[in-house]
Image (cartoon, rainbow, N blue to C red; front, side, top):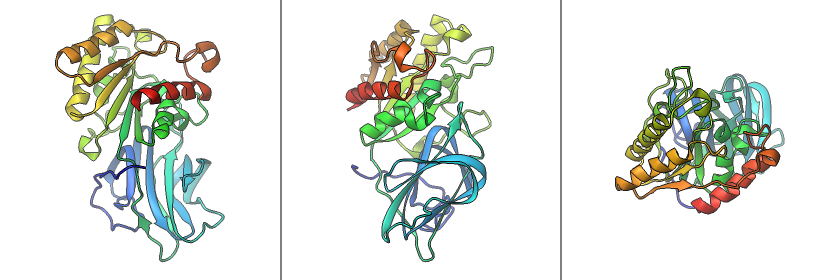
Length: 322
């Protein structure tokens, strides 16, 4: 993987001790770090990466939760309903330096259980090590499709995660089911505004965009707006506002506005991109998704892609982002 990325960490722990504030633990996605002893992921697909010495690694979990863990780049293993000290290496590893990735499982967009990371436990005398991580971070903004709803591992099998992994990039999915672009009177949460928060709930703090810089931002919004009667003008105006806000936070990122797979609000999405281009922002691009997936064979219900559908989307999208 190319390069290293600087991730801003709260000054809460000694480097190497495995506590949440250990600077050797790298966090991708948006994490609420207000408590030095328990970090909480927001949105979909947030994950943590840490290197470590020794032959075992365990997680400190507060209450019961479902999670996925990968050691040394292996397949993610599912752990359901685990709590307390969770042994991820019942068979000891060879002595040396290893890498762990952890992500919490979502069900219908909410973390299934107590998604609170309290650090890692290592062998006596072992310590954490700064892992090698990609310099490129791709941010995906969307709804249930981007969150991976109805795919086998939700966020981990969604097109955003898969696309970035194909490209050897780090990634974050600012996505949850049932969100709109435009905030509606009947309660559909509008990503136009909520994008600025650490998590979906208004109680979460505003996100500190200095924590990381996305190289690319991919937007896939509009599938839910139609069902909440968002007008053409409301949608287009909200899209322009979101594009402006992303640009203000990421001055150098390339922003991709995807055509929804339902082909809704296509003209409005194109018009929002054109408005930003006309304003001098040449790094905002429309992504034509015609023919990428077949709703009959590549979705679970006519809307949400299967694992195979997400793989097809990722193959197309990776070729564009590459």
